[in-house]
Length: 485
Ligand SMILES: *[C@@H]1O[C@H](CO)[C@@H](O)[C@H](O)[C@H]1NC(C)=O
Ligand SMILES: *[C@@H]1O[C@H](CO)[C@@H](O)[C@H](O)[C@H]1NC(C)=O
Ligand SMILES: *[C@@H]1O[C@H](CO)[C@@H](O)[C@H](O)[C@H]1NC(C)=O
Ligand SMILES: *[C@@H]1O[C@H](CO)[C@@H](O)[C@H](O)[C@H]1NC(C)=O
Ligand SMILES: *[C@@H]1O[C@H](CO)[C@@H](O)[C@H](O)[C@H]1NC(C)=O
Ligand SMILES: *[C@@H]1O[C@H](CO)[C@@H](O)[C@H](O)[C@H]1NC(C)=O
Ligand SMILES: *[C@@H]1O[C@H](CO)[C@@H](O)[C@H](O)[C@H]1NC(C)=O
Ligand SMILES: *[C@@H]1O[C@H](CO)[C@@H](O)[C@H](O)[C@H]1NC(C)=O
Image 1 (spheres, rainbow, N blue to C red):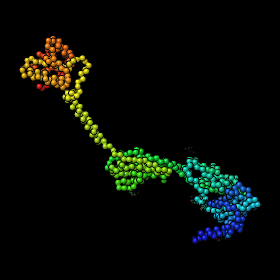
Image 2: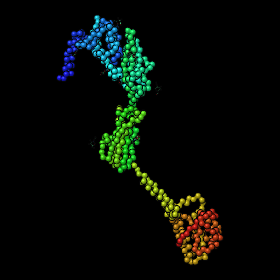
Image 3: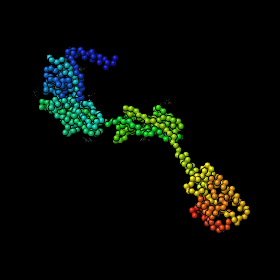
Image 4: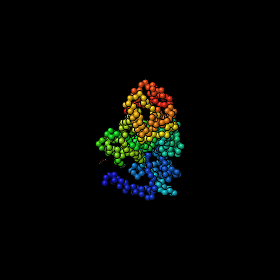
């Protein structure tokens, strides 16, 4: 058993014995209040439980340090610096030796026995924090500093006059029981003292009490993930990537703002090739708090494209998440190559068509039979004329062969054109000139077979004029072709 326990035990043993001597056993005991006061001031005390009571001096007796060897009874002599009058206890000029435990015993014919207790501490220095009646600490825009109750009550009971000081400097023009500070800032922090100046027996006394004002910045809790925004992030395999988890937590909430990356549902765990850095920034002057966690993947691997990365923002009240997955970036090179290939193919095809249009047309002719539903009423596609005179036998045979076999076999059988071949299709007995004119009118084209050995062509040009290349003459398209037989 140590000394403190021993003392408590002794106290417990002694106390009831003491009280049983001086008070009736059922005497009610009030709560204890402590006041730290400064030397030289006055103090006017009414116990809160006696506030509304009407008490005569005979009804109550005050003691200092009751039941101790330096115990003394308080006088009712108004000329004494410490005295009582009815329910009020007066300290007119506080001295350190006034410090102590004061108790009152109230007993009367109509009242139950009561005990009131108060502890007074008197300090020498005025600005000690021990005198403070607590602190006012909030983030309110407009702050209320109430005058400590013993002081404001003194003024009310004794019709005193209130003044206010900030950091022990007088605030002009303030005599209110509660001081309001509007649009408070850090500069308004400090010790606010209200002093009541009151008169007693034609003498002026001061009683004061102070409170400390602490300005706290407004705190707003929010939780918004500002990065990542997208659910997917394009990445290149084999390259480094940084994943940015950024969370806005609100205003002035530095201690309640955290972010981290979760990998496949688990909090990020340091592994080779992966690292995480975190920091929390408080912007000035807004005090907006943003926490950021950067997950660095040194080399993105195939596995990372299957991994679920989760950005977690932890605020004061809750936690929010946003999931991010990596996606392979589609390279632009294959696209470009593809486009160039298509372009080249188109150019090649265009060239091919340009040079082999006729061959292609002929090649596809069997599959796409000629649409003979031409709008005009002509019967033949071509009227074939040739020159047989002034020819040697060989040429004549070749020409005959060409006209009767080669030409029809290709143009008629293969390509489906209808030809009027002079000498094959003309009906004997018809008027030659009339026939030529009529058939030519019914033909869309005139095909003139030119044979080697043709002189100036004067013999045939009496019927058909000179043949300039690719021109329009007499309503016909003139084109020159060559065929080897
Ligand atoms: C009161 O008692 C304490 C010990 O409890 C002693 O130190 C002190 O001198 C006493 N005072 C008087 C005035 O007898
Ligand atoms: C208090 O002192 C004044 C003079 O200073 C005197 O006139 C008065 O009678 C005294 N009062 C008592 C109760 O002793
Ligand atoms: C309190 O007062 C003492 C002297 O009166 C002074 O030296 C000290 O700086 C003061 N402290 C504050 C916090 O004002
Ligand atoms: C009075 O001062 C003491 C230190 O001497 C301190 O422990 C106590 O909290 C103060 N009481 C009040 C009400 O300020
Ligand atoms: C407090 O600030 C608001 C605007 O922020 C202003 O409208 C108002 O007048 C200010 N009040 C005082 C008492 O300065
Ligand atoms: C009371 O306080 C005021 C200012 O706070 C001071 O001027 C005056 O001298 C003080 N009076 C006494 C009796 O202490
Ligand atoms: C992370 O994202 C936030 C919000 O988009 C941005 O302000 C910050 O600069 C980014 N940090 C890095 C390291 O990219
Ligand atoms: C990190 O991961 C390993 C295995 O992957 C595990 O054993 C270890 O407990 C983890 N550490 C933390 C802090 O989660």
